[in-house]
Structures are given as C-alpha cells and as structure tokens.
Amino acid sequence: MNAGFFFYLVLIVLCSLAGGLTPLIGDWSRRSLLIPVSFSGGVLLGATFFDMIPESAPILRDALGWPLIAGFLTIFMLERFVLVHPYPEHAGEHGHAHHIHLGLTAYLGLSFHSLLDGLALSSSYQRPELGGVVLLAVIFHKIPDAFALASLLLLDRWERRSIVLAMLVFACSTPLGAIVTWVFLRHADDMVIAVSIALSAGTFLAVATSDVLPQIRRFNDADSLPHPLWPLVALFAGIAVTWFGRVIAG
Image (cartoon, rainbow, N blue to C red):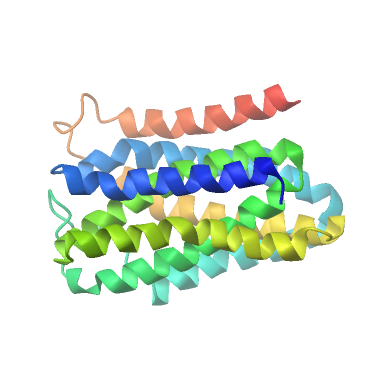
C-alpha cells in the first residue's frame, strides 16, 4: 500500500468523523442536510456516468450490464430489507420518524454500505485517472451520511460517548473495505478491476437515485431556503465538478 492510497484512507476517516460529530455540537434540522446531500448526489452521478462506466465499458463490452445491475440491486436490497434510511421520508423538522428505535439497524446497514465504498475506492485507485474523482464521490456522500446517521442516533437517545465511538467505527468501515479489496485487487488483471469498477458504479447509481433524487423531489417548502431551486442547483454543481475533473484529467 503506497503513501497516496494511505492518504486517501486517512482523508475519508477525517471527513466521516467531521460529518458524524457535527450534530453533537449544535441543533441541526433535516433541512440542513438538503444542500450537501444534493451536491453529493450530483458527484455520485457524475462519477458514475463520466468516469466509472466509460472506464470499464471498453474492457467489459456487452458484459457491462451485469456488474452494474448487481451493484444497483445490492444497494436496493440492502435499503429494502436492512437499512433504515438516514433521511426519513416522514420526518419532521428535526428528523423525528415513526421508528426511531431502529437506529442500530440504520447504523449497521450504512456501515455495510461503507464497506462497498471501500471497494469503489480500491478498485478505482488502480486507474490513476479515476482515483481522484471516486475519492471525491465517496467523501461528498459520506459526510452527509455520517451527519444524518449521528442525528438519528441522537434521536434514538444514544449517549454522546457511545455515538462518538460508533462514528469512529463507521468512519473506519470504508478504509477497512478498501484495505481488504486492495489485497485482492493489487495483482488483479484488467477484467477483474473493470468488473469491480462497474459494480461500484452500480452502487453509486443506486445511492443517487434512491437516496438523493427523492429528497429533492419531496422538497416543497420554499421558505426554508433562499430559493426552492437551490437543491437542484447543488445537484448540477456536483455533476459539473466531476465533469470538469474528467476534462482536466484528459
């Protein structure tokens, strides 16, 4: 494992902790998450369509669809049967939901999802032109995820000391997944790496379409932001960031 990859892992841990510990030092509402969540959705979509799919398509060709749909359905089934959503659909101003006592389920589900982010990071790092944009995508959706998850645990009446420990473990889950997959992908051929990148692209696409876009669609309170179009602007800004990154990378 080289210094660059180690730097990626440390950066993800620090950003996850920043997102997860912020709710402990203030009174935050669910609306506070909308702009960063929208931006992260744009980054995920941009990384998927501008970087990950174009990188794996020339190698996988007609087989590209299989790992894509496998990654997409993995997240779909995880959220359908395991994960309590960290941005509850029927939450109130401070995120109160009908089943707050399932905070542990949300924690375990998101932690497993973070392991899959580790797969995305380690597989993309094998391609220098992908490493930076995938790191950006992972960071920009882990920060609001960690923020929302810690808020949910607070609502679930976890002690603050327990939340700090839980968020530390959560922050390390993506590096753990990255290290494990790095061991297996370090000497892998182009086909294996392309499959891993396409699988990760499917997970990114699922998170963006099932977690982010519905939040923007449900938002209809024009008084809570300077303008109701701001979440959409943030979404397109995230897409633009990844597109410009791809153009600069050549």
